[in-house]
Image (cartoon, rainbow, N blue to C red):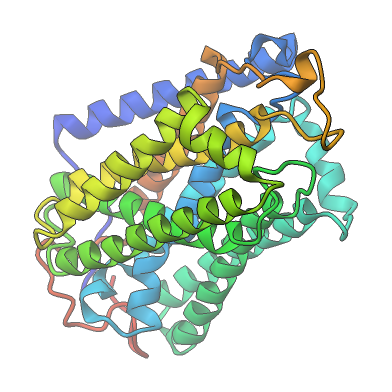
Length: 396
């Protein structure tokens, strides 16, 4: 199979490129403004210290892990329909992770202090673990792409793909552990958040890959026709797993007196957080499942709903978990701001930073696709071993 770089001639591609570049530039301006003026221009406060940028960043990081689904299906599980999509899968995963990490870096207020985080590790901190996991993920994605693009390295393809599969599961578990180990907040401290984040990553990544393939098919020709029905089935299972784990989380929280207040807050009395929770459950979960039941005919609409629902779900977990006051004195009522639900309204710079990081990830992907022969000819059925066997990666 011969692979090709992206050579679009459509006006819609140029418009998309201009729009993404504009969003990336606005994100850079927003980050600079927050760096110079300080975080008081955002909606964050002493109670809500992780806001909208963290929601976007975590969504991109989780989607990066799940975007490698196609590569794993091709090279680990030997699914022939995914073989032409393996290169795109790895490039998308690396780009999404880069965009998510860029948001986190620019939201720190002092991006230069990343040097300290890279040179002084505190191995008792789950954040330090995740730095290693992020770097390892990008390294394995690069090694996997090297095996795909270089025929002599193709014999290491299956081993590299298996390591990448294991690593991305560990990475997603580490992202969930950031919240699962925080004992001070009843909305976070739960071991079930770890498998829940894995399910969310698989769903978000599958949805992101489906939408990316749809956009590229418009400019390059249909590249995922053979795998579309299988993608729909997989995405349906991932959504079902996410819904089941979410239900289990809140049922256990309702049973546990220490977390019952948070469960009632999210499910019944949380205002906007309650609206977002039920919106993601119904519009981002149940409705996509119904659409995917029609043999993948509505895969792209379902994928868009899954991404919107994922952002709402992460907002409930990350921001809602901070908005509920901490039980500083169990059994006692705390007067004043510390005893009330913390207000939070995301500001325009926060939204621009999050959107700018996502736009930068897509720009990196399009740039790589313009240079590298990563896209199969339109309408390939995956019969040639381009991503899963010893001769994979030889196509140029």
